[in-house]
Image: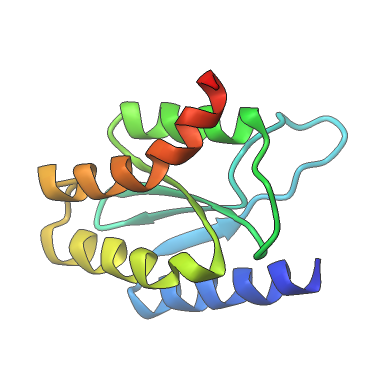
Length: 121
């Protein structure tokens, strides 16, 4: 868990560098399951990030929730340490454009496709 927390802090620091509003979602016994770890907004774009350590595995519900966010016009991603540069590029594009461009949508969809495929087997 320590690796995931350190990585989460890197992500929050990056969001802060871009001036994004964000907060860490903490799930308690009475909260909804599967909500991404970090919720934010950058230039009017809703961003949700499920943070995973190197060997972490997202639950099917976490994957579904990211997909729902993407279908609703936001950005929902599952990010491992190896994906940090991808997240930088996503935030850079949102900061530059203030919207989810078609190119950015294709990038996010390509990243998430492998996760979606695990749902359908």
